[in-house]
Image 1: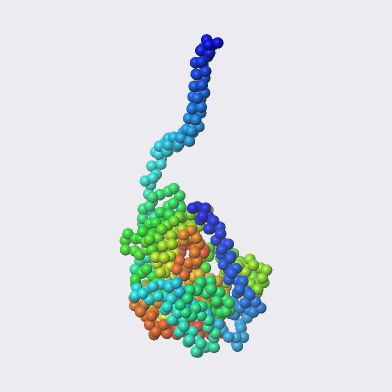
Image 2: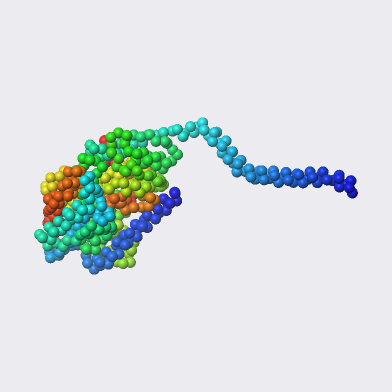
Length: 275
Length: 197
């Protein structure tokens, strides 16, 4: 028993490395020769550049996500909201929109972040409905990533970033530097934390003004789907599917449209700062 | 000759018997060697007992649960058997955490969850291995998944000085998440800012 645990522990970094290798290689191939969009705020792109927004409807397929007391499934609400948001963006903005899923299918967490990277997303937005063991829990909140990394890991990463202040993708393009690529993709989101936090603020402000739900604010947590995303990325918890009243709202066309509208306005404001 | 033979016969018989006896004695001691060690151990235990009236030693730990009042984790004292190692105590603490609150607090973990093992490395990382019930019995949202993770992480780090970070395993293996949200592939540092008081 002990030995089993011990092995698991020692192998963990290796499986990490493998996972990121799988992520990094196709993305690196696609990104080759082209600077990543929105990267670290340097070299603002040309005015004619078409922006790409990747929208991620949480869960799907066998993985239903949270369940409401009346039986509503998170995966269905998130897809409905994402489709409305896509329609809204395509109608009013000249942005390209890519969904990580547009039907009720299983999509792995890696595939979701890889979609953002392979599509060279300028922004990644994951849509979720929340659930709590507390019956009274209600309201809307927007998350950006906290790595949950230990201080020494964080120090190592920051040291690496400081020593390599140029763009991440310039390094990723060099096929020989496997090790460096692994470190970089592991911390892909770390380079965009400030912009992600701004995007979260802007979306949360619009949720507050449009939804009439309780403001739970902007928060940080180590969300798996955000870690490997190499652009500003947030996760929106629209409302609590575990709360009977909010469960009803979430399933309604009106509320779903309001959520889509709020996220859309947040995006508009964000792209005013980062054109 | 017959006389001689008759004279030597008892000697031969005695000699034969003594050889048989020697063999029996040898077998007795060789075969009995393990038993002897056991006996020594049995003797040692009662000897060590006066200072080690320990089996009955108890200690109090704080278990962290949710409440309907706020979004914080609330501590509830619970007695567990003490010793012999932090890992053993941590395992008992996790079992108590899963049993749930004796007051009106809300457990962040499914009550069916098994604790398979707790292992603490020298660098202060506790590996807590749960049964698959922890993933299957709840359909997690972000809030409930965060609460599940941090009720485990904070309970262990709060009670055991030797535990600085906590990694969660399921059925002996590393998992990406419990329910699609929070990254389990790295150990967690405790977050005492979410504890009440």
